Length: 499
Image (cartoon, rainbow, N blue to C red; front, side, top):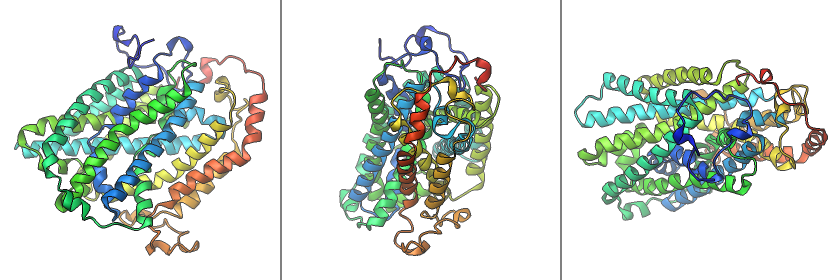
């Protein structure tokens, strides 16, 4: 068995993936846990990781505090992805189908809709950033940069993302391998070219912040990295052979996803801490601002690394958003679901690129708001997985009258309650449409919406903990009952919408 990203695919002609929500058969399983490195590294090697240094310092904390928050938030959140990825190996189905074991077949539609919104939102943000970065580079070169340039850039970037999402797994695995190599090399070159802009005296002079500000930065890192992927973590491990190492799945997912963001974060902190001007510019144009310190001759390679890195993440998102849409109840083939999401992605990108000026405020608001219910779902999913001693009965994942039931009240109530509590403990003043949040900060003695805990984003951690501990304490009997039944009859393909 080799460790190539897609064993045997080199001799196969690329074609549109026909799999949707259906279970991957043994004959089509391939690769080893190590192959998970490629999609996860390729999706997270984006130059955007440099901008997170500025985002973290924006919480009012020092370099060392921001570094600690980043390391803990990135590694821990991607470790959660690794645990969820184990479910893919054990159940051979997409993440939001495996989630039915906890929520019931139709009860799972609620978290599937939230998952769909999050992945569509992420692919939209990444596509918009790639478009703005391309326009900025061309403007510096004197080749355009106005509305026409942005339109062309959006068409090209959007086409790359949509084609990858529609074609499916095989193309994505090949594409991510190329993205990994190209962006990895060019990112190292970028770091070498701008290293002289780092001034440690300025970085070390950035004052320290409070514990609350540190926690806020840590939670932002969690939602910006692993918690943005956790709802799709099993979509790629489902193609691995059943006897693959669970530890290997966790380890390679976590390592592949974390290594690039960690390195980029360190350098991004050094750059942002060295220049107040650059730090401010990144908030308005997270990728384009990074071109202002580059020599002109490297602008085209920079555009390549920026666009490829962002496309790598967006392609994984559009693939998983299509699967989430099918899990939410849409009865169309997978490639049509991905195409529909592509249309929404382009529409959202048009709004971000042409009609809004406050990117960072809206971005943080989006991450925090959807990060709360996703954290609650993640807690339920991880506890449900930890309670299981047997692999999933794959056929019953598609049958409302099977062992997993139709609508399971406990996980739904836990998710809704954890979300309600979580939203009451987060705030975001930069996004006016979120002013209703933070309603529990006053009653719980945390200083209200203007107090020291207002921006700690405790709601994300609270939702994760409540979902996990509640399921662990109350869900054991339900899981044991599910696993006590005999194997179900084989699945008929007609029972799988979107197969």
